[in-house]
Amino acid sequence: KAIEESRKVLAQAGGDDDEVRMITATGYLATRRLDAAREALRGLQQPEGYDEPEILAFITEWMDPWNGTVDEDDIWDWENNSTIDHLNEQMRMLRYWTPKHSEDSVEHSDRLSMIAKLSSVASLRMQRRHDEALQLALEAVKFDPLGVRPRIAVALCLIDKGNWHQAMEVYQELKESDINDPRVIALSVLLGNEADVEHIEVSLAVEKGKNVRKWLDEAPVNAVAGLGIKGGMDEAINANIMICAHESVRRSMTPRYSPSIFHYIIQFVLLPPIFIVSAIAMSGYSGQVQGIVTGVVLFMLQFGFARFRRQQGRQIKHRDQRTLVDYARMMKRFKVNPNSGNIPIGTHLLLSGILVTVNGVVLDVGMPGWLTHRLPKDADKTIRSRLKRNALSISKNKPAKLNPLTKGWWRKRPKEDESEIPILEQLIGPVAYRGRQTMLMKKTTGFRQAPTGKLNLNPVGSHDFKGRNVPRNTRTSERSARTGPNRPSRRP
Image (cartoon, rainbow, N blue to C red; front, side, top):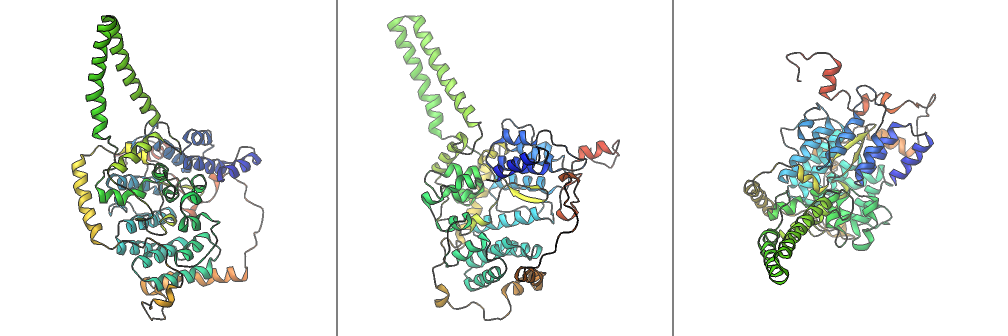
């Protein structure tokens, strides 16, 4: 839908709106139409120092591990860029199935980094590290006291810890300020209330099976939609492979794909002798030349079929991607089965993949499973020993809440705390309510500052982005090229 609307706007602008073209390219990335994304980004009039189009082009090439024109060395050409640093950390998390960024990672204070923290909250909840998840959620509230998702993350963490009344208190605050937000409605359903399921956030919270199939195309980067239908595992790991991280840790499954031993037995032990025997039989029946031709043809057919399957696996698409179908079979072999019985409630509201920005607005393009081909070839023994240690810590902790709360639970369950101080103020202080009264006053009184002057119709690259944390001049090679010869202290 976003692609259709952006194409309409682009047609009205005569095809000369850079911002709309970037939004269209991001939509194509989310639906795994990489060639269309490249075409949408081609020929953008990029102002000097404006990095968003180049970052989108880089992510487009990165998401194609077979035909993309970038590799890991190109990551280090960017400096102090939250999108690239986040991509680097996402690949590290995928390498070891870790649920959050490393402590040595570069810290950024922008909205993209905040959304990445909320995604880490979802992963920490799945791996039963509830205290760390709550701490990250509270940090997100400190960064964005008026945001909806940080408060939802706190409420979900409180539900996991058994503090249901405190979670309800957070929901009541959200209900007061953002009652019509679909994410807030989804949280109310998870807390035992009733609501219509017209929005995807609400539908994925309560519905399963055929009722969520329609969301596969509407939300191609939401992995929970794929898990909700039968046979949708490959679509789920196409959207975001981190949805299976917790189960992969428990079953000690390494992230890189490896065929089963039966595949090698059939390919290299059973078929060659069969082909040789067939050639000998044909030689005795029709002559030596016919026998040799039969053997050569059979071996060529085997080689051609293997090559055909390899080429099919490198065709990137949203549905039935061959590499991910094989990956789903490997997951089945290791008994890795992420489903509603082991995924915490509300995961679909927090989990995200690779994040990009368009005009400072953060967008999620998912984390497709074929990116495991970009991981270094570590020894399976080394990774499995690490996964076993993490699996042991998972087994010792209490699982997160897996089902929505029942209706009317608040009548039977005593309150955890009788204090009159709001729970968020108890946890992080008055900073949790910074600017909240002003926001409520504007929403309740309908106060809006009337726009003055003419609308700014300048190209997106010429806007003032200081308050939006839009990356500018973060590519070291271009910066050094503009500033003349490198000095000894400057990075080449």
